[in-house]
Amino acid sequence: NAGVTQTPKFRVLKTGQSMTLLCAQDMNHEYMYWYRQDPGMGLRLIHYSVGEGTTAKGEVPDGYNVSRLKKQNFLLGLESAAPSQTSVYFCASSYVLVGALQETQYFGPGTRLLVL
Amino acid sequence: SQQGEEDPQALSIQEGENATMNCSYKTSINNLQWYRQNSGRGLVHLILIRSNEREKHSGRLRVTLDTSKKSSSLLITASRAADTASYFCATKSSGSRLTFGEGTQLTVNP
Image (tube, rainbow over all chains, first blue to last red; front, side, top):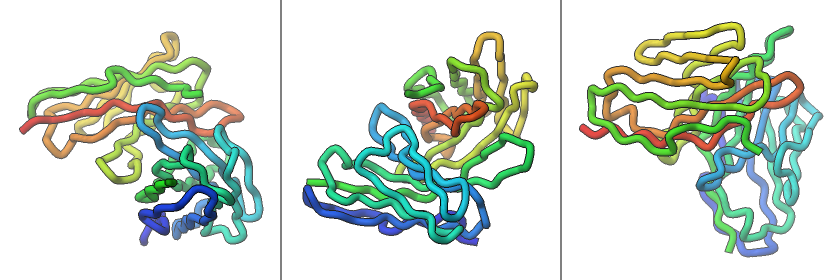
C-alpha cells in the first residue's frame, strides 16, 4: 500500500513553461486535493475533486488547472509557469463516510517547484 | 484566508518536557484535526476531535476543544527529539473543505 504518491519530487521551470504534476492514491478514496505550501502561509487549497470526473476550485485556483479522469489519479497543470508559483505542492486524498463530515486527509510527500 | 491560527509560531523545549500548542478559529466547526509535518515531508494526521467532544487522548497526545472560546490545544507529554516537527490544526465546517492554520514549529532538544 503506497498511499499517496507524487511525481516528480522536484522540478525547475523557466517562466512561461508548462508542466503537469501527477498525484496517485491506492486507497480508493473519493476526495482528492491539491495544496501549495509557502513559508508563513500554511497550506492553501488550489483545487479539489469529490469524485472521478469532478473538479472544483479552492482558495487559490488562478494559474492552475486540474483533471480527475481516473479515481486514483489527480493531475495539476501549470499552463504558463510564473515565479509566483514557486512553492511546495502537496496532494492529499480522503475517504467519505456517509452522513459524516470527517474528511481526514492523507498527504503525499510533496513536489518542490522552482520557477525561474 | 486561514481559519485556524496556531500559537506560538515556534516552540523550543528540552526532551522530557511537555509541549503545548494552541489553535484558535473563527467560525463554527464540525471537527478540528491536528497534523504533524516533519521537515521535507507531507502532513500526517494525528488526531480528530468532534465539536461535541471536549477532550481526546491518543498515546502521548492530548487534545482539548473549547467551542465557546473557539480554541483547541494540543499537548504532547514527555517529548522526544523525534517529536521535532511542525504541527498544524485544521478545521472542518459544514459546506467547506478542511482549512489549515500556519503551524507551530516545535523543536525538542536532546
